[in-house]
Each structure stands twice: as structure tokens, then as C-alpha cells.
Image 1 (cartoon, rainbow, N blue to C red):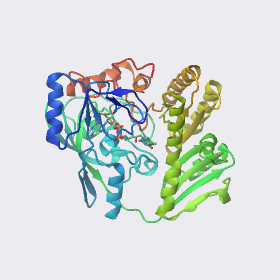
Image 2: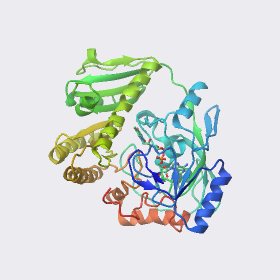
Image 3: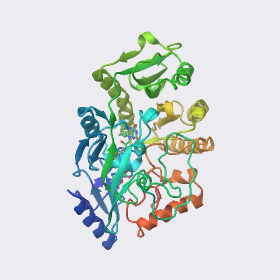
Image 4: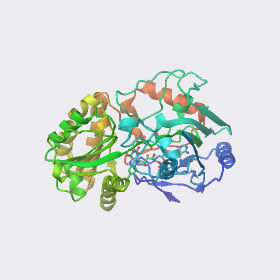
Length: 437
Ligand SMILES: Cc1cc2nc3c(=O)[nH]c(=O)nc-3n(C[C@H](O)[C@H](O)[C@H](O)COP(=O)(O)OP(=O)(O)OC[C@H]3O[C@@H](n4cnc5c(N)ncnc54)[C@H](O)[C@@H]3O)c2cc1C
């Protein structure tokens, strides 16, 4: 059967299993292992890199593992539980689950496996910072429970990290690292998360949300620099003029903000009278939907064109924010004309590019320039994957980030958990020819 995720990756599986409990997950993994059948873990399939779409073999859907126990300071969660269920469960108890990777129909298992982050990571960090413990089913039939502070029990080398606030490309490896950190961001290639203990924080008080418009990109970038240090600022998102155009708004640039508590933002250079501000949860939800409608519109336009989605997830060190935006715009304009939008998490120097193609030639040009921009981001100290993982669609970018010996160190860890290389085949380490995707 055909299976895809939000990236449109053309996956398929001979059979999909939907276990109802951890014991069944273990049995399926043991069977896949003994029969040497490739098996791919599927969350809610909102991923944008093809990680959850099987390359043949079996699919393992975690959708029925939906435990959700809210306690003071923590939640015990099944991997198939949706992000929005955790968020609303926490809110109903007067608490707060901080990660908010925009697509709240994603599953917690998928969020952990991709180290998802989103807009609030500006203040609260990525999913990694909010995982207290994990239960993980392995291919050899064991289930291990790992807690924060518990180091890995085998040797791993130290791999360099980019100088960014977010990173989700390849395994995080460092001697005596937390075991939990190995499984966060592993994209379903080392084991299956069957349960997570997540940190809940006290709910913040009043929150001011806003969509602030600007007459120019420069004015918006000046505001980013001025506002970045504002106490309580938890979201700082950018929409370029082309993005706004797609959302039927006629301004040149916008910043979306959320601030916890009182704050006095310097509104110099903003189109204050045209901007939208709100303190009610309902209005903030309207703003969230406004922001969320952009990737949806982008995806719809790409689907209509019949070409695969070509988008980026690169981030750079904060001080390189303007430099990389200038590089993006100059090179994209040369390669694809006006057929691109730039938006996203500017507070973390993490902007997404999406390109649009109407012909194979345009698609080839867009693919070449987005790969070239990955090299530019890395040369500035950045990452080729800040929050989506690399999956299958972007597995080729791993070698832009890491040296061959560093990738070999990751492969050695992979072989330790999956000697026959059957879990998440094609994800992170391309073993199929995906160069045309
Ligand atoms: C409109 C839109 C907006 C988005 N915005 C953001 C954003 O702001 N920030 C962000 O980070 N992401 C964003 N995403 C991407 C996506 O929502 C995230 O990557 C999310 O974490 C994927 O979760 P999922 O449950 O859909 O996982 P899937 O797509 O099903 O799988 C993703 C990966 O996780 C693995 N996996 C899933 N469950 C498990 C498990 N239990 N154990 C081991 N491995 C597992 C899969 O094998 C796969 O490699 C967006 C997506 C869309 C469609």
C-alpha cells in the first residue's frame, strides 16, 4: 500500500501493523528481525522529510499507543498521543507543555524522534529539553528505560555541533552522553519510543500575542535585533513579503510575537496601526492558525504543481541572521526568480525556504540552489537540519554537515542497535537512490 507523509515522499509498505501495547510492539520488532524484513516507524505522518514513509517492508504505526497521564510537573505519554492532546491536558491541569512545533496533530513519538521545536523554542528550547525519560523497544526484543542523567554504556566519540540554538540532523554523540539524548532525534533508526515522561511547567500568566507589520524587510530585521532580549518574549517569527502575499496580506514583512507578562516593545519602524495584537487565548489561536495556514497554502500550491516539495530547514548562528538572509535572497532570485517564500523562526536564525516549480528545469534549478544554500549555512557555522530531521528526502545533506569519519561513527552506533539495518531504511543514511527526489 502507498504511504506518504506531509513531504509527499512516495513510500509504500507490504503490511502495516498497529500494535495496541508495548508487548505487541516488541513481538513485531522481533519478527521483523528474525525474518529480516525492513520496518519503518510511523507516527502521525506530519513529518516533512519522508522519515515515517516506509521504503517497502513493514510499517509500524504507533497511533494506538495513546496513554496520557498528567501529574504535577510531568506527563506520562504514549508515543501515538498527539501534541495537541498533551498541550490541552497540561493546560487543563494549570500547567504548560512548552514545545510547540506548529503542527499540533503530530505525535509525541514523532516529536521526540525528530527533536521537533517550532516557534516557542526561542525561549524554551526544543523537545530534547523537555524529555525526562523514555521507554524504547529495540530490535533484539529488549525494552530499555532511560532517564535524564543516565549515561550511555558504550563508547561514543565526540561529534562537533553547529553553533546554532537548534539542531536535528544525525545522532548527537558525545562521550558519556545521556542515553535519552541518543534516542531524541534518531528518526526511528535506532529503536521505537513506546513511552515518554515529559516535563510540564507552571502555566505562564497573561500572554500578549501580535502580528506586527513592517514597510520593509530592513525595518523588520532591526526590530528582531532590538526585541530579541525582551524579557518574556517566547516567539519571534518572520514572514517575508511573498509569504504575506500568499496569505492575502499586502505588506512587505511581518514579525509574529508572543510575550509572557508585561513588556514594553519599542515600536519604532513598525506599521503599528495596521498590526494585530491580542491577549485572549482565542485571538492567539487565530494568529496561530494564520501562521499555520502558510505552510498549508505552500503545500497545496506544490501539490497542484505536481513537483515534490523543496524546502529547507537550515539554521545559522544568531549573529549570521542578516548575512544568511541576504545570501538566500540573492541566490534564490538568480536561480528561481520570484518562485520562493522565506518564513519561520528568525529568533533562532532559522528561516525556512520553500520553492515552487512549474517545469522540470525549474525544479532542477531549485534543487541545486537549495543544496548550495545548505553549504552556505554550514560554512557560517550552521546546520542543514534544525528541527525536521533529515528523513529520506534530505539524507544527502548529512555529508554536507559531517565529515565521512563522523558519519561512520554514527553508522557504528546504528549497527550496534540494528546490525541488519532494517529499522527506518533510507532514513538519515541513504541506502536507496533518492537523488531524484
Ligand atoms: C504544516 C506543518 C507545519 C510544521 N511545523 C513544524 C515546526 O514548526 N517545527 C517542527 O519541528 N516540525 C514541524 N512540522 C513537521 C512535523 O510536524 C514534525 O516533524 C513532527 O515531529 C512529526 O511528527 P509525526 O508524529 O507526524 O511523525 P512522522 O512524520 O510519522 O515521523 C517522523 C519521524 O519520526 C519517527 N518516529 C515516529 N514515531 C516514532 C516513535 N514512537 N519511535 C521512534 N521513531 C518514531 C519516524 O520513523 C520518522 O522518522 C510541520 C509539519 C507540517 C505539516
